[in-house]
Image (cartoon, rainbow, N blue to C red; front, side, top):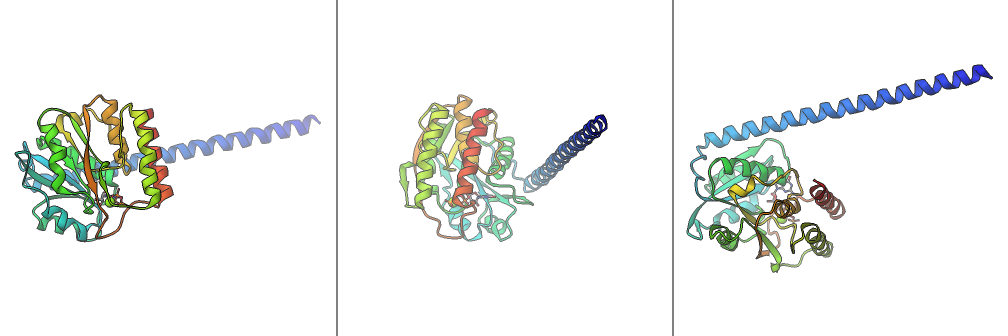
Length: 288
Ligand SMILES: Nc1nc2c(ncn2[C@@H]2O[C@H](COP(=O)(O)OP(=O)(O)OP(=O)(O)O)[C@@H](O)[C@H]2O)c(=O)[nH]1
Ligand SMILES: [Mg+2]
């Protein structure tokens, strides 16, 4: 009897030891993977910084309204967007930076052919990561205001003044484009329901009415950027809105249009996965 008990106890101890060792190994693997990822990101950032400096772009953005466009395989859509960017907005000259997010098509050369400054992520990192790269470079280059819009032609560059003027006049730090206050061409029903649902959630958590938390057409006064903690690789819009409210920046929603894509295709994951990713980004930003 005693022998059976001892053998069982020994078996239990061995199993426990093996379990702990496995957990230790898994934790080490995670730490190593995280370190490797950080090194890779640092490498990509260094390459981007060098490319930006080589393009002598540092002076091109000083005191300008910087137009920041993240672009991933948008060779067909990007040209018309760039042609429509106004030379001046609310009396201030614009300068355009396209962050080519690891495209495998001619996005970068199309952007250059249209006179934009281009930096490239050598691997695809997501729209949020592309915007962070742009924010970092443009802040260092002395831009006054940064306005972001998509490369797919869904936002209208002609409406840029609505976003930039309230910042230049000193009224607010951040403007957020809203298709709900403005105009939206009909899209998938699930997407429309999602926009309405997430608007309610984000408004509640941000303690302020936010009618279109997935709209990437927005602008910010550059010094205010430093106060935001932006980490999302992909679902950056809700993070940006919630952070702006959380850090006490003066925000205003501005009516804008969102039209249908006429070239290329959406890079977003399917609706359910998109909804989950969007919800996770909201919760993580809120808990921060
Ligand atoms: N989704 C996605 N977009 C990226 C990425 N990198 C850069 N972008 C750019 O981010 C912008 C928004 O991407 P879209 O896939 O059009 O997302 P969306 O406009 O919110 O969604 P749709 O309404 O489906 O077009 C575009 O200019 C993309 O080219 C990426 O890794 N994924
Ligand atoms: Mg789009």
